[in-house]
Length: 355
Image 1 (tube, helix red, strand yellow):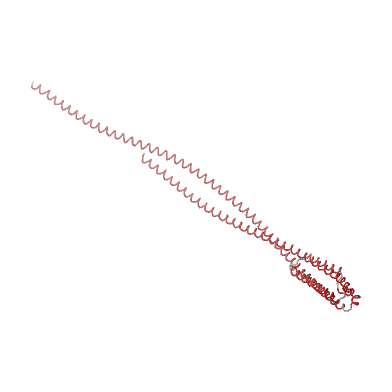
Image 2 (cartoon, helix red, strand yellow; image 1 turned 60 degrees about the vertical axis):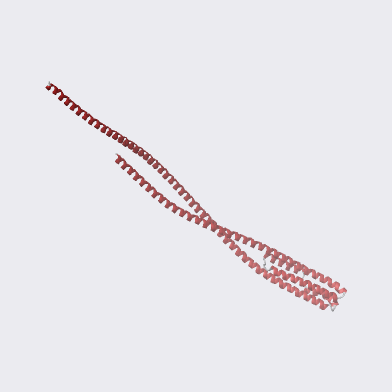
């Protein structure tokens, strides 16, 4: 009985030992399971994070590719716009150059025409000045001749009146010889008319700037003649008798009428000379105005040419500056392209590291 009682106790102990070993293994397995499950959870979380990061990277890659394509399109559009602008600027510059050349040719032609007109006017003025000088000289000659003739007439009148006074002491001889003496000392009306017509023709052909002085001389002479007429008429009235005074009055009145006609002809000549001088002065004024207008036109043309030269110089400077700006823009474009290449290479390196 004892042996039988010991056997089951040993078996129980063995079973208990086995159970305890099994329990220990289960505990170990449970611990491993818990540890491994935690490892799995951590790994799954890490995997989810990695997948999310990869998705983010892919999305960023797509966005960058879209940005690169948009940037390329924008770059192409900008390049096309710049080319258009450059073409437009070149066309405008060509048009400006053409207009400047045309205007230069036009103004050069105008300058030549104005110079030709000025030279022609100068030649005309010189010719007219020569003609005026010649006319002045001829007028001076005619005036001197007329002064000499007037002096001769004064001398003749003085001789006539002295002869009349001398013969007044012998009235009978004066009555007989009065007609002969008066005809000897006085010119006829026909001669006076021919002389006056000759002087008027000469004065109508030539102009005189010294007409005012001659007018004063002629007026003085006419005043002297009038004074002499009054003086001698008073003396004759005092010395001669009533019968002789009537006869002498008739003769003297005829002679005085001839003198008055001669003075009238001289006055007409003076008026003609004054009219000619006025015409000449008007022509000189018109010529001076034309010369002033041509000078103003010449000054305006010189100013316009100077302005055109300034515009051409400014256009050349603008073209130089535009060339410098184009060089700067090309350098900036090159730098942008290099930066884009660097960014793409960096992005590829990042993708390789992620993989």
